[in-house]
Image (tube, rainbow, N blue to C red; front, side, top):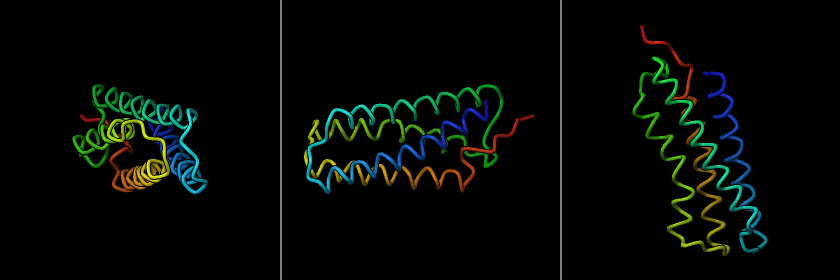
Length: 130
């Protein structure tokens, strides 16, 4: 299960980067945000949610990240799950250039946050509590 979590989290990191680049291109072209981007953003939130659920399953079976900071892991993962849909809600579905810039910056921030989580061993390696 640890391997599944690692694969999902790495996918999440790459997806954050791709989403940020896509939103930046939309903003640079001054195009409105389309349905494809909204679908990708939903996929992003679902991917983070599934990763969190696998992490919770690992915690429930007696594993924890080597750093031992379980609460920090859970808080960061909740952030990654709710921030994109939450920003969409706060912007009330706007699809203009400034919204694209906002989503681009947010995706790049989430990308850097996720890299930071790896560096601080918040997402692994997982160790079994004895």
